[in-house]
Length: 132
Image 1: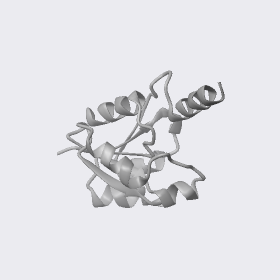
Image 2: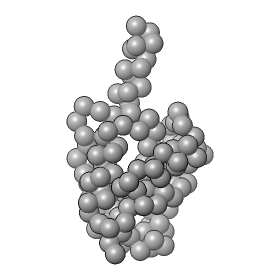
Image 3: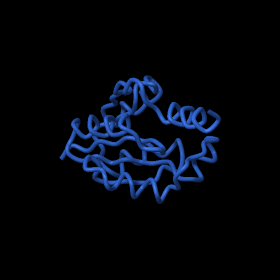
Image 4: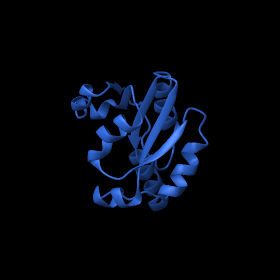
């Protein structure tokens, strides 16, 4: 069985996220998604609309996702890859090169982002509507 892992906050889930998860799943048989915990988001100075538990429930309902695990730190990726026998690490190409050090442990793939959508764009659009 070929295992794939990806990481993210996955807040305000949109079709770009689904596109990434679908393409990640196509690279193997089993997709693990590590989502940032609320505490880790605080460390990254990131504020999610949904809590970790709520984001976990949403991701577990997506047919491409086989397992959801918590991401508590930047440093845990090597441990996650080893502990879960991961074959492929996947991230959006906005992270290109940042995780090349993982090539020692598994294949590293950077997938192109879906054009025209992002959580940042959604938040800006909602502010524009609110401030109308």
